Amino acid sequence: MWGPKMSEIPNYISLEEAITITQKYALKTEIESTPLDQAHGRILGSDLPSKVNDPPFDNSAMDGFAVRFKDTETAPTTLRVVATSQAAASNDSVSISTGEAVRIMTGAPIPKGADAIIPIEACVVEGDSVTLTQPSKPHFIRRCGENIKQGIIGLEQGSYLSPQSISMCATMGYDRLPLMKKLKIGIISTGDELKSPGEPLSFGEIYESNSYGLSGLVEALGHTPIRYPAVIDSLSELRTQFNEAASECDLFLTSGGVSMGEWDFVRKLMEEEGDIAFWRVRIRPGSPPLFGHWNGTPMFGLPGNPVSSHVVFRMLVTPYLRDSLQTSFPIDRIVHAKLLTDVRSTKDCLTLRRVSLHSTQEGFLAEQPKHQGSGNIDSLSSADGLTLLQPGQSGKTGEWIEVLLL
Ligand code: AMP
Ligand code: MG
Image 1 (tube, protein in one colour):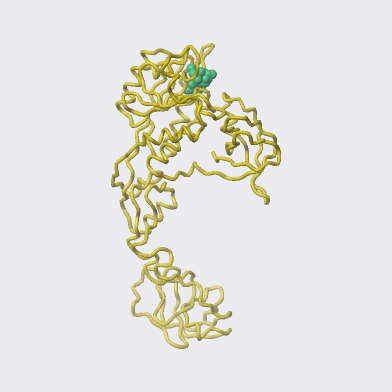
Image 2: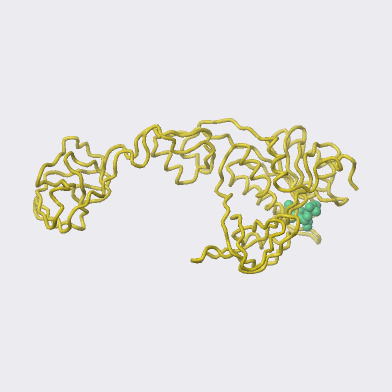
């Protein structure tokens, strides 16, 4: 069924061993300067030191009155309003002395001589005097550089640029960013039975779904998916598509055709003409993946079952991209959860069941509400996480386990 070459390569290895093998073939990318407003979801290519102090000057955290703390330790106190400090006002000259206050807006510079802010809610204004109904505290002043000081690294190389980190870049004064150039990642679905969504189905056919989900995963990691049309189970058609993907892409993924069957042509083609680094990994679902090179381009052969293709992407392709480029990803988080229902574990595999999470005072509770067939994409699309049940872990109700968030 499969030839001598397959018996020589690492077969049915642990996830850790598989990841270690992929790391030997780390991908590289270049750095490109990109406008800030195109940087969301991308990966930072170098450490980013702040160009400025944030805030750049002492300023008020409240609308109210800037006062001298000493004048206002007891309430009520009445002070004379001598000026107004607005945000962006150039008020170098505004200052106060004993018995005086300056009306101030949030974000406006603190006048010289002032060292406390009384919020507007605690003031009664009459003409040019203000009565403070509560004693002041030396609060509500945002000090120059208290968020980040000029020259300090605000975001590290490899950071995934979330909306909040984009704001951080802007605050630090960057209108362009050094970003890692997106990798081109090809996606090839294989199988005679696959039809594109939108087309009518004949008996025996199903809608091709894996390439869409895998494209989403590639995008979620900040790279560019290239989704090729599905290929029928034919060695020559696959070869043609592999050649195209290998020449256009930095990496390509296939789905389907990697098991031991007669029709598993991805495995067959890789075995006969490719360069396989490992085949089959001890994870369930998703044990048949292979990793190797085609014409020198790395490729992962993912299983065809829809849940398995996602799970193997999360288990193998995400770490490969993360470790290659030293990146952190938002979709790579693990939480602890207590099992609310029994989950079937395995003796020799990492078991990845789909669970819903409930947040309680005790922590997360994990429940397995749906049947867990690896063809049941509904069980994945409705889940919050994947159990990371180690080989031999019981999976019994009440056990605390790790869950990878989806
Ligand atoms: P295979 O690994 O090729 O034997 O496929 C395993 C199962 O996954 C079969 O039931 C296939 O019909 C299904 N399958 C394979 N590729 C896809 C795909 N791209 N989208 C949806 N289901 C698929
Ligand atoms: Mg198939």
